[in-house]
Structure formats: structure tokens, C-alpha cells
Length: 303
Image (cartoon, rainbow, N blue to C red; front, top):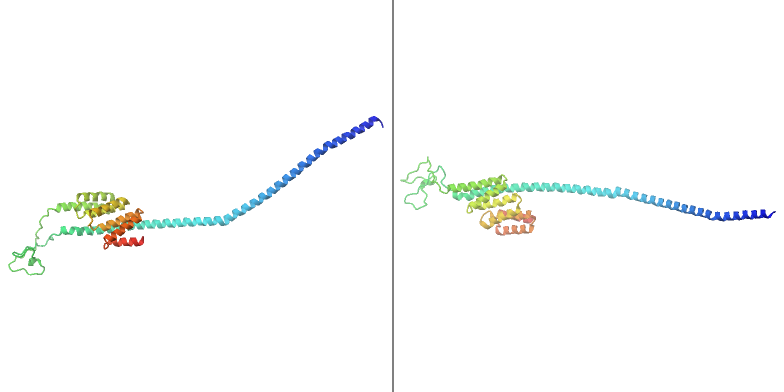
């Protein structure tokens, strides 16, 4: 074997060794990448399983909420809606009943005031009835003696002349009649405004009446209706002021107990229950036998 051949063989062997040495790291690198990819794939598979478990748990919780919690909550909401609707209906009924009660009370006041006006005007309105003979005094008799002919069923005294029954003697004109007539007309005009629920006009009319006729027997009633007109307009502060003015200016009037009752009612409407109770207690103390005191006792018992 020649030297050249040996050299070629050694060179070929060296090249093979070098090639094998170069290929080893490359092959190791390929193996490392495959292992990393395998680990990443395993991790992804684990994450996928965890995600599926979480999704299943969330779905189960949502289903439970829909089947139990939300249904119960929805039922409670519906019950609350029904309760609110029922309470709203009750409030509407109570409001209507209160309005009707106030209307009936106002009508009652109107009727009572009409009767009181007749009683208050009665002393000045007494006069000889039209168509009846005037009672002539007996000559020589003491003043104020009723003649026999004035007593029903009594026989005429001897020597007396029986007055004719036909053609009644007309009463003497009353000089104060025009003034009383205008006074009554002014009061009735304002009162008609109140009865027709024209409360602003009633307040103006009664106010003018009190200023024009402050000493009139009807002045306390006029002041009282001013307060009631304000109350009907739900102007409770003005109603209290008007009724207190009545109590201060006409303390002996029969309207004072009703005025105090109206003051207490206005205070209740203004949510001032403590002051209203004191007003009712003062009414009972000052006028224990009045009809207004009876109403005050009932209200104190209720509240």
C-alpha cells in the first residue's frame, strides 16, 4: 500500500470523525426542542382541562342562581310591586274620604252658621207681626200691663173698644233698617261665595265685612269663615292667623271653640302634632262643654 493511499484513508477517517462531532450537537438541539414542545403541549392540555372545569362550575352556578336565587328575587320584587300598588290605592281612598269629610264638615258649618245667624239676628228682628193688631195700653194701668184684648180667649173689659181685626196697623219705620239690610246683604254675598267654593272671593268679602262692620254680631262669624276659606285652600298658616285673630278680637264669641279646633286641624296638616295637641288640650280646658271640645277629645284619643 502506498503512502498516498494511507494518507487518503487517514484523511477520510479524520473527516468522518469531524462530521460525527459536528452532527452530535445539532442532534441534541433537535431533541431539546422536541421536549420543550412536548412540555408546552402538555401544559396547554392542562390549561384546557382547567378552563373546561371552570366553565362547567360557572355554568352550574348560573343555573343554580337562575333556578333559585333569581326566581326568589323576582318573586320578592313582584310582591313589593303589589304592596306598593295596594298602598297607593289605600292612599287614594283615604284622600278621597278626607276630601269628602272636609266637604261634609264644611256643609255642616254652613248649616250651623245659618242657624246661628238667625239666632243672633233674632233680638233685633222682633217686631209686631204683620196682620196682627197693636196692643194698646189700658188707660190708668201701670206701664207694661197687657190689655185684656191682647190675651187670647179673654173677654174685652167693660168700656173698652175692641180694635178692628181687618187692616193691620203698619209698624213704624225703623230708621236702622237700611243699615242692617246692607250689613246682612254684605255678609250673605260673601257667604254665598264660600258655599260656591269661590274661596278667594269669600275671603275678600268677609274681610271687607269685618273692616266695615267690626261691631256687628256677624263679625265673629265672618272672621271664622275667613279662616275656613284659607283652610279649604290648604293655606294652613293663613288659616291659623285668621282664627287666632278671631280668638283675640272676639274672645266671648260662640265661634271661639270652633276656631281653636280649626287651628289644631291646620297644625296637624302642617305635621306639627305636638302643637296641635296643646291646642286641643287648651280648647278642652277653656270650653269643656262645647261640641268642639268633644271633637277634640276624640282626636286626642285617636292620635
